[in-house]
Image 1 (cartoon, rainbow, N blue to C red):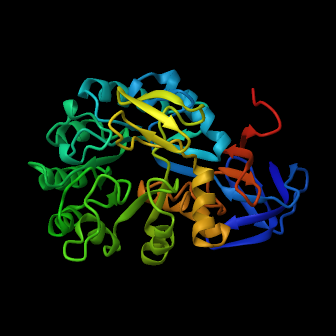
Image 2 (cartoon, helix red, strand yellow):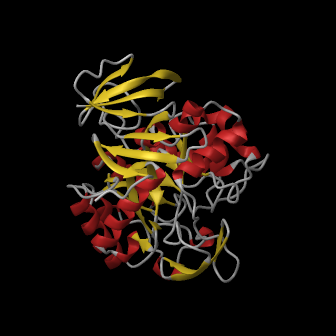
Amino acid sequence: MKAIINAKVVTENSAADGGILFDERICEIGDIHAGGAEVIDACGAYVIPGFVDVHIHGYKGFDTSDGNKSGIENIAKALTSNGVTAWCPTTMTVSMEDIQTALDQIGELMQGGEGARVLGANVEGPFINPEKKGAQSAEFVKKPNADFIIKNKDRIKLVTLAPEVDGGIEFIKRVTAETEVNVSVGHTAANLNLACAAFAAGARQVTHLFNAMPPLNHREPGVIGAALTDDRVYCELIADTFHINPVLFKILDKVIGDRLVLITDCMRAGGMPDGEYTLGGQPVSVRGIECRLSDGTIAGSILTMNMAVKNFMDAVGCPIWEAVKKASLNPARSVGEDENIGSLAVGKRADIVICDSNINIQKTIISGSLAYDCNRQIV
């Protein structure tokens, strides 16, 4: 048994002085009795739930679409330094063979591995509209293939779809009827009526809201208008202050609240110096927080989850628990994992992070075991 004491414990709707008692799962929160437990003194720092990144391609030089098991596991281990305890390795619009290879590796890592827990894949392409491909490769764009998703349903959590493409609505109906995969509307030119039809058919998420879709217009609100007004739909947000002007963070907080899901959309350049990298086989230049293809197209990000929370908190002026929730419980709910992870609650997995008020990560604990300590290397 372990105990964290002298902490500000961040639960779903509050932050209060206290502690937390745990083994693999959380046993007690608040005025705990450590007894003979191994004690970790937080020295007044915050204790928050581990972050859940449901849309991230790569980090520290590795990319999910490489289809390399050790590479994906290296990402999982490196993410713990950012407070991430669970994630969805995210593929790009590459060949179906490469996507299948990545899914096979992800399926193996779902059974166990080092670092942040692999929940299942996020399949961002190839069932998209080439007119809104963004940094995806037009060469590998395909018509929706529900059979492919259904075949791999045990290793996929999310799949992006442009509902206007041929067979799009039928794809949503089949996938949502025959699997627990969450269909996310994205890389799309859909108008309001078609977006509403997609949500009526069962889609329950929007891939990086505002990006790779028509802008919100007062006469044609499009996907954005449909998502903002549908209480069933989760909306991803890349809170790096480059993809989206932070003024909008406050608006989104007021309009959609707990349906907002902070993501990184991070690529292999994350945690690396400025330079030349690749994303889905395409060359990307990284300068500061900007990642671009040679034609200037924005290509993913180098955002980390702890920085996303800090950016959101600063822009909105909200309490820490509110910002943390959008990076932990909300994404966990969006992929159906909230019974076990996403918040500090008795009975849930002991996925716990200790951080300061600027969300600098001090320690990351996964299922009760220390996975990251800023003061020493974990062997």
